[in-house]
Image (cartoon, rainbow, N blue to C red):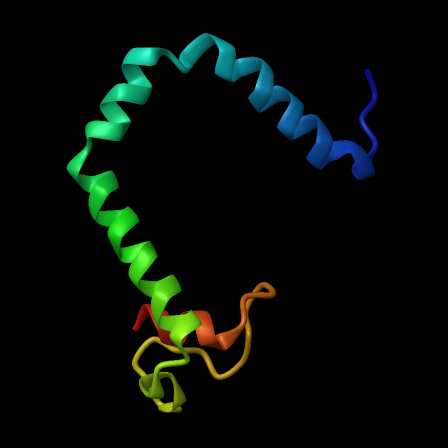
Length: 84
């Protein structure tokens, strides 16, 4: 079977969808939902989203550590500032 470059993304997603039937079990989903690490990441993500949406004055600081000067991979700088 020959793959075209334009179909690579679609083929990748299709492969994931076929594979997930074999490894996503109710027990795995339950373990993920009970995970402390997942809860912490969820809380941190929620805090970043809240900070960005609130237009917090701290986001106006231009020289935050780990903040790029321009967007990266179509991610606006405000999201990097929010995570700081």
